[in-house]
Image 1 (tube, rainbow, N blue to C red):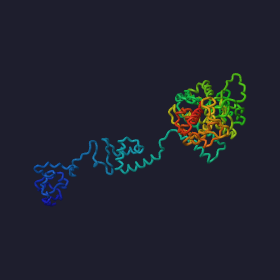
Image 2: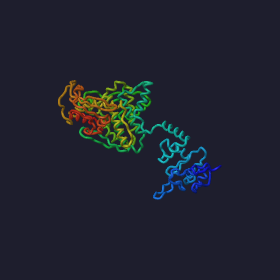
Image 3: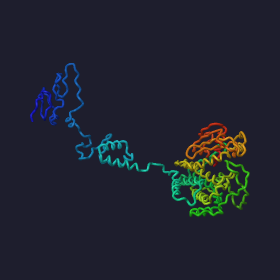
Image 4: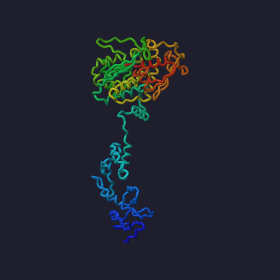
Length: 527
């Protein structure tokens, strides 16, 4: 190949050892690469020749020109060296993507591919994540695999609480009943009790044996101040067993406090497990005779009638839930330390639901004697459902277990019961001197002052509470005050867990009427 004359500043066409221009030498790298110097130019603007490094010649009084940071391509290729402990890219097999280095740590293709599963689950460390994501932009095979894994992760069930949705049981039952109506349906007013006892039983099933000894503080409002009593998880279930026994005996079922009924209780539990309805003669409520005791929490007077003579050696069984609980705690010491009360409580609750289902609509009006007041069975079952929920939350708080509120339909039944009991409770507080006398007396059926109670949220609603007489007629235009509470806050107030004056309530209108209703709501609670 012939050399061209470079006196005009042109670039050589092929490899040569030297350039005649001003005796300048071309670096050996350019000779080996066959490109010539990229700065091999003539001085066409009359400012002087270039020096051996391709820079301009320094004139007198001028600062030396700084070298360009750019190196000739061939020279860079000769000076690049692979990092220590890492092979150069030229030594990678054909078609294999290069290794990735992040913060001094090496990740080759095999390691990065093994990390794709953890990356899809977001389980990689920050360094591994950065290395994998950098590799995916260079490796099509791994990018496709990563996309498939991410899609698969999206199909996995999201991380949830271990507790089932509280509405799941009702949804499943409702779906089954749509397809095939039950031969013996559970009454609407008994469904909340059925659901709440099932939820509490599920919580108890998940508990460890040691957790039955966890301390639980029972709280209620005694009419003037907050009261409390400490027990254990086992003691709470024993309390529910004794208190539910009030309703059970009204339905003709054995009383858990009466030792004579122990064999009968086991036989009814076995019959219920076999799906047999109780005999008609077993559905006997208390004798309905007019009573004279003071009615508390808005209920009717207790239907006390002639008492049957007590058998020699038999102990008196009280009606009041608190007295029944104290008696059961004294007689069954193991119930405070072990799950001894769980199975009897569970079987008693199932027997109660079966009984009201088989008995038909007539059983709803039976009176349940609570000692100093009485409730019809339909309201007593809602009362027991509410207390079951509240004590389930007490247990859940004691063992740090997540627990949710009942479904909206069931909560509405409970809130409605509390709202219906408020007028009678206001009157009871006035009779006992816990509250001031009304501004005026209103005859039954006549219009009187009212308070608008608004319970917000799913299961809430609007109620107009008569203030002057439980039997007074109420109209929206007679409203003198308005109270608005969240549904959960209202239920906590009714349970006695919140002080009346500390309830987060929106208030408007007559302050005395608002105070009367808030204190009456808290007075519905009991142990």
